[in-house]
Length: 176
Image 1: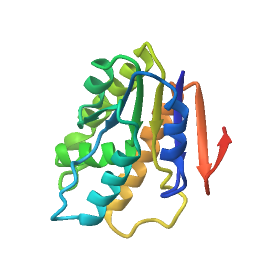
Image 2 (image 1 turned 60 degrees about the horizontal axis):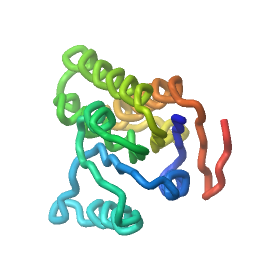
Image 3 (image 1 turned 30 degrees about the vertical axis):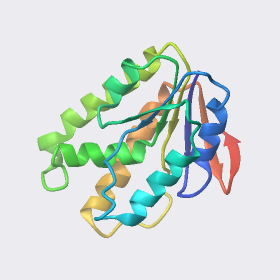
Image 4 (image 1 turned 60 degrees about the vertical axis):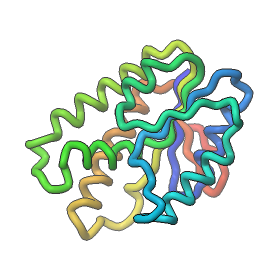
């Protein structure tokens, strides 16, 4: 079963994702984003620590930007949290914040496609958490527009290969 869970910030999507896999005996939690630097961003580091503390002790954690490899090299259930941090890390890794799309977008989409294929090929359940960021105002800065547009398309691509897509709003789950 492939499940994509989307929603706004603090909607309860991560908690719901964890509740879907809590009974599994072999869970790998993939955190595909930049590693928190407690000195540079103590609030972000605190959020990451709260997520870590909430997980059962027997869950394995993999922190990497190489989402394809993390899925492919893992046995058992996989929980990915979240695509938003992954997109941010990919853009940074490809130097996309400062270059034109033509310079790096093909490599970006190649990595997205490989991650989706790894998800689809995985023998056990995969639960993917993402953010729904396109419901607000148009961001003033290029980086905000770039992130919003790419994440929206990445969400669509992952949803295409998922058996179920859930929207979490105010802790309530809507099956789409």
